[in-house]
Length: 113
Length: 107
Image (tube, rainbow over all chains, first blue to last red; front, side, top):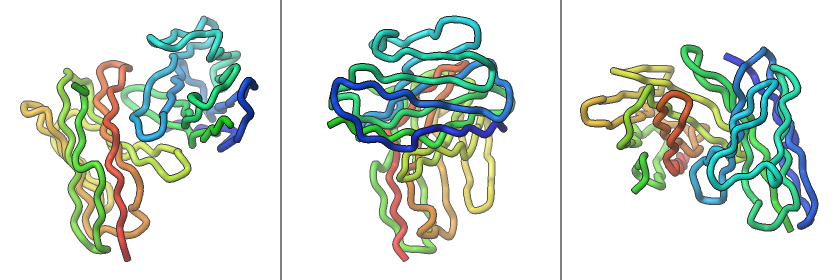
């Protein structure tokens, strides 16, 4: 299965600023997924990113707040824009699908102060 | 009502104990996944099940499709097993995640 390198692993940011999270995959993958895990909650899908097309956002998430880039089949970024303390979460990327299964990144623990 | 319910929410065990974590789901599934989340937040995929039983080392996962229930068992638990275990029901590429079971294994 694919190996994902996710950066940064953690960050503490000031409110009103933006943070870009990167995921690099060691093989070409069609679909990449971005998740948010708020404290004490389960994972929630933010968007699905396919190379060469606009990301598809889930209900409650908008492109202005969480712009995503997918310039090629091995790389994607998620930006958390104009951050507030409510954005403090773990953010994860994921790739894969049947039959090989799914791989998740190591997570980015974001704290907004 | 959540599509995926896990129990228990928290679990403390002595090293060497046999551990069971249960998962019930209400959606139709392509597969059922068990994930392990480490304190830093990273997630490792443990099992992907569509029927029966799978074993990997000291970990065993079972699923009963008719009853929409899955269990994760850890035999001879060890402190390094301490983590959050997440059950996720998948329909196509759509995941429904449980809220996780926080396991602490005491030496």
